[in-house]
Length: 246
Image (cartoon, rainbow, N blue to C red):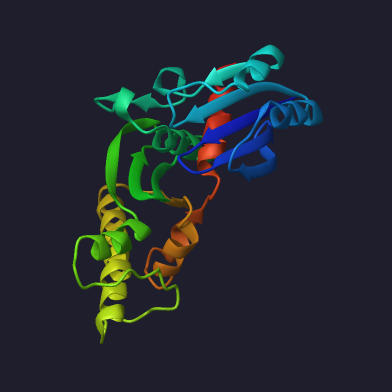
């Protein structure tokens, strides 16, 4: 019997099927309906399911999951594998919490710094004992490019350039690229150095849509050999939440 994990974001919906800890199927949708859910449940013999959503309203297709599976809605109240010491757990983003749960599940007994490169960049640390106190949120890669164009009269809107490796720009476009991408690189290194200086035996885990780009930014840093890429960390964290709620 398998688990179905559903992560509903602002733009896309991710569905993943797990046999215990092994992810056997994953797909991204713009929208899903009851027929999609029914097909997946039948194909993979789903017995348990979990939904994490940025939306407050329930979807019409949830009734099918309730009828055919044991359904959980992911929130801080069902998380049992870590000690969540966030002062306002009800305001903690589900993606941040799920990523921390996933990191502690995958690398149990290790100190884990999770860096999630999405719309925002988040930094969240969970220690080897499963204690989570909080983290940091800063603007993401595309948000920085958009902000420079939106809040100024003369700066153009640019896209990220994976081939840029200069330490400065020699015209307006490359100056923007340097400011955004080197700014993120120095931010990443600064956070990693801070956590590493205070914690021994630390894992650095990159996840989120920009994880590959961030890995490129850090490829020549002293931390490169210690970085782990887990693009599906949130989905794995949601599956871990199912397993720990048996």
